[in-house]
Image (cartoon, rainbow, N blue to C red):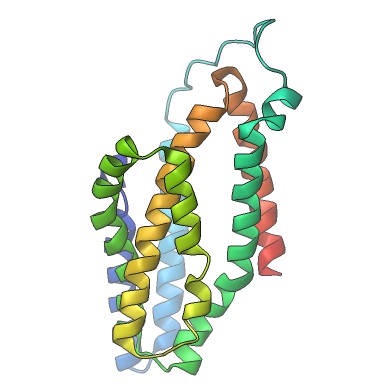
Length: 220
């Protein structure tokens, strides 16, 4: 999806995938439903790679000047704390992420329709919250809003153990989606605010590699 879609693109595809799984289960061929979705996802990645390869290279950032902060100085400041926090939060999140799907399908016995609705609710919350958060962050500093987002994100996974009723899970997803929208918006803004332009590409490249490592470690 184009950047203007925001969370709406994933929401649309999530709804289509949920509908496909629901139909495949109804016709007693769930394996074919999953196989079709994985094949479609693989084809989409191939098409995406083609479009990415056709893009022109962006102008390179200017080389660091003699007065610009070094790597060590940059990481010793707010940028280092921010990236370290983001990595640690991802590690904590990915310890719990693999449990959500089997918990909903095998323990709570949600149908694929209810399962899709629960997941889609978080996207809806992000769609509704982001414009409001964008106006709020102009009045409240991004780092303060990030603190509120962290306080909202932290207890969400534990609250899933309180009840398995569908209305409760939908309410929880509304709250969680709003908190995650605040987290994503504030970290995006703070990355540009705390990392000098000439160091940004290199630091974010290293961060993305470490982020992938953290996801694997957390999942394992």
